Length: 133
Image (cartoon, rainbow, N blue to C red; front, side, top):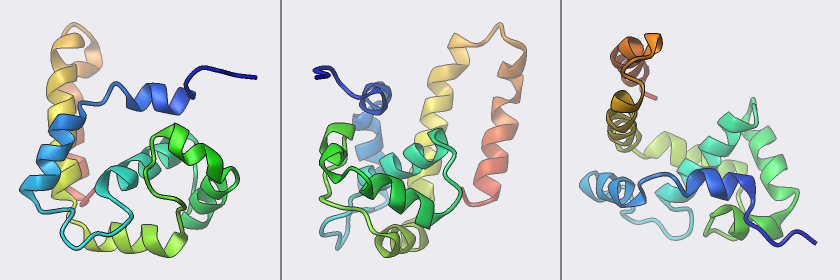
């Protein structure tokens, strides 16, 4: 039996969660939230991106396939439903995630300063923010 951490939780462990929590607090992202936190939403969207999920139904089906693994992936909610994920995406401000992405890009810029794609980070961020992502 496997005794280590899941790959997804190992990847998410590298995120600066104190900065993410500060972004959430700044924009009051947890106001009137009972179960599905902004961190759960971030993890669900990261999971969808990393595993090439194409729809909310696809995300839900994959995360509900092994509900006992959600905790080990880093989620704190018991289950993820399509409606809850859709409501969170519709009602929570995208500025939380845009500010967090800006911080991550700031961390990545010095690491990849000598790479050719390092110059394009500003235009990519502006394109994402302009689209409301």
